Length: 468
Figure (tube, rainbow, N blue to C red):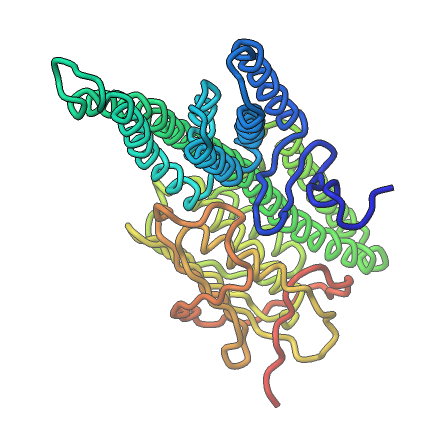
């Protein structure tokens, strides 16, 4: 059991193999235990080699103390560069004061200075640089003065001062190389490590961005499939329900009409089933294509809506030739959803006016119907108008939908060619409010007599009742 305040509590493992702690204000770097063990083993081995090679030359216990101190400094060089540098300076000053000559173990200081610039903090790096500059000066003064003290009483061809100066310069150059070069090497290693970490961080960021892009693409496709599924199923089921209700009434009056209604139900259901299968195929296979009706299918759509009792009046202006597939699909789906909403929420027996205007640079859609005021329609979820708004925004267009007197009007204006840089399919914010000038509806014609529509409401956007 570890006692409170013991060293093992000072240097704690941040995980099963690393240590990082603070002891009396000295910061220890986070290191793996195997790294610490390696540094200690290297320092002990080098210290033992020095001890073996110079054992005969060590005359006093002080020399063993200095060797031990430098060995400890070398062992701490990566765990705590600042503490290791402090220990090295203490030993060096002790050697200068004590009556002994610095030994070969002082080479260990080069390794300590290297780690100050390689792993140390900013203050420790500066301290290492100062040591690399002051150390040679101190060594030159120490050995120069010591040499002069031995030469001043000896008669030679040169003066003692000249010889001692040469000795001082030699020691200055040697110690400068032993300290400054390791410090510079540490700076280079630190710079390379920082560059490597920056590259790694950049690669990780790029990988995360690519992963996010893939997730966004999947979400866009999911929203697109959901929108297409809503358009297909909502419209087809509306037709099926209307024809089923009509067939139920016709069975009592005219079986031939009932047979025709049942045929329409079968045709509509089969077509919807085929569209759904094609849509699901696009989900299963990357090369699959979703249903892409175009402007030629609008006539079929109008016939279907008329078959279920909706009096649709269509006016076209301009030539749609050359419109891109994306624009044609958007026009078809917007008209489809507008007519479906008119059938489910409009006043029965009143005409629905649809106007399609094709200009060289724009396409305008206007669908106007009389709003029901009997309150029999159930509330919708709002997906219909949201889907139309998304389709318009997908091509760079705008849409408005709302009450216009006793009518409900949908007006869309979009570029003939989708604008570049528009938001990708499925990524249009669903809460965005769009604005555009509504296109005036054509003059109303006399309402036609239609079969009653009593089917339950489907998912769509309810139209507001006129203010009383």
